[in-house]
Image 1 (tube, one colour):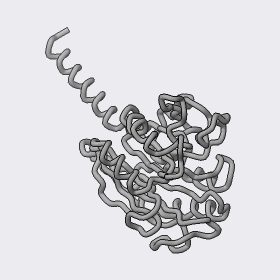
Image 2 (cartoon, helix red, strand yellow):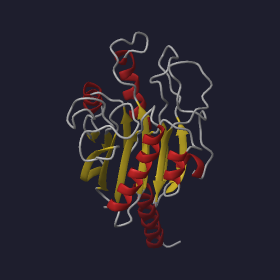
Image 3 (tube, one colour):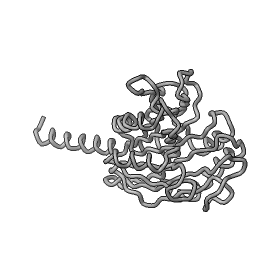
Image 4 (cartoon, helix red, strand yellow):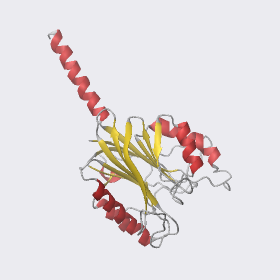
Length: 277
């Protein structure tokens, strides 16, 4: 074969491969368990280094955490040098209370971001419906620096008590997504929704977005459940999700990596979904 043809074909293949890789995106949701100073064997200080190692190993493009207090958010931010984050504490919209922060890799830049409360008054600190406490959703529009592709990314933590709060929180988030995504960009919604797949809060979401776990091109890997409660219970309780729209789901992994003593890193397992456009 002519040498020039070989070189041309190699360049075309290289360009196509680079384009495919650059359009792949990974989203991880992870309830990291708040830093409860009363914890003994499950104390944050015994878990945090392994958590950083896990995140660095799987290299998500976007990481949505739940239950992170400001010191935890800051620790992750300091020890994940290839990431930055958006988000605020739910108690005052600043640094007080749990965050639903979104960390994004340095391949992306935020175009806009905000946090709203899951309530009838989403633009101010508030408790919604029959919820036990304030709950929030943090979101951002992110642009890939090389491809210029935009992604809307949302991260939420639903109430653990209020049934009506979970139902209405789902409706509120879908309404917010529809109002923002006027350009029909890819959407990722992730979080701890505190409810199993058949309940109304989830079906409200899956009427508009796809559940990556059920729509993956390859069989999901790992346990079926995401909540472990720091016990050795059977992992069949799936309450953590990554939803998407305008993206192909390539794979989903529920990650059951452990501490050196075989205890769980958090009382939830992280869920990692890989997509392409």
